[in-house]
Image 1 (cartoon, one colour):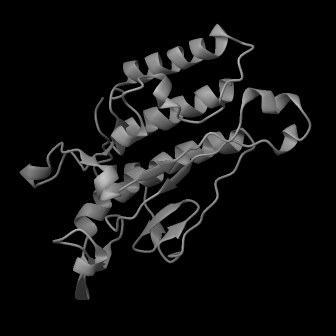
Image 2 (cartoon, helix red, strand yellow):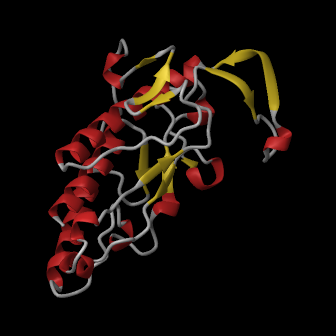
Length: 220
């Protein structure tokens, strides 16, 4: 349970630090601390309860808020005033999605086969905002039937270099913690020319947020 809470804290705080995403109601370090404390209290309140062992169980924080209220945050330094501090709902834009179904309960740890017990979270994206070049995209419309192709590919580096390094830095921090717990980060990606287990490639290499010239992250 301590590992679950530490993972939640690192995941939420690093996502906030790098300006990558925020959950509705968990938009400051103080609110994340409060969430962790409330979840710890829930674990301790009834130690005999068959607790669901789930990563990012934000429903404990507020039943009216949760993964459906995740927001992807474009850069604060956007030159487009219409996108300044804008919040794009991942549900409609599919910028980032999370899968963290409950597959393990406390009672499962009491019987045989405990060595095979796993809890996990999956991160996926259906957006090409991460790539430095866009050969195809949807500019108008709602489905891929409305897509537009670019020949030569559209240069997307302005946006990619604002978004992708944030994700890479976030993933590095989460991956480090997971490996400390003797867990693993697995890659399931059909476009491996763009993605590695260390993050998303930009111009053939992994770029972290602190590698950029200004080295800035979102102020909290």
